Length: 226
Image (cartoon, rainbow, N blue to C red):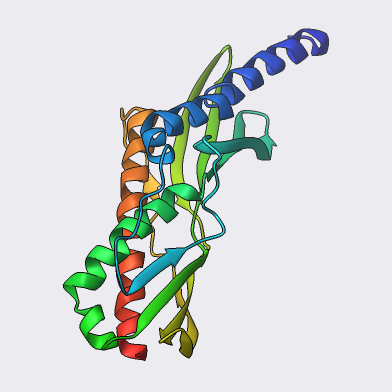
C-alpha cells in the first residue's frame, strides 16, 4: 500500500477508535441517572444540625464531560491509543447525598445527646465529584487484517471530602474545626462482554455509596472531637 493510500486508512482507523465513546453520550447517561436528584435540594429538618455548601447551585446539568487522546503509540505492527473521558459531576449530586445521609446517621449515633444543648453547623467545602473513563485501545496488524480490543477502567477522583464545623451555644461560638476524610472510591474495570453504559452505572452506584460512607465518617470524626 502506497503512502498516499495508507494515510486515509490510518485516518479511518483513528476515527473509529476515538468515536466509540464521547462526551455527549457520557453526559446523557449522567442526566438519565441524576436528573431527578438535581431538581430539588433536600432540607435538614433538625433543631441542632445545619448543613451548607457553596456547591448548592441551580445548575440542572448533571455532568460536564471532556475527552482527550493521550499516549498514541503507532508502531509497525502494533498501535496503542489512550483515550480519557473526564467526567465532572455536578457537585450538587454528592452534596445532596451528604445532606440526606449525615443527619440520619448523626441521629442514629446520638450526636444531639453528645452536644448537650449545643448546635453544630457543617459546611461542605470540598467533595469528590470527578471520575475518568480511561480507554486503552489496541490494534495489531496482520498483513491485510487488523485485530483490535479495548481495556476500559473507571478511575475515581483523588479529591478528599472536606467539611468544616462550628459548635455554638446560645449563638456564641464554642469550637470550630475542619474534618478531612480521604476518598476511598475504587477503580472499576469493564468486564468482558459488559456494556459500557452498565459499567458506568455500576461505577456511579459505587460512587454514591462511597459518598454516603464518607458522610458517616464525618459524623464519627465529629463525635471524637466534641
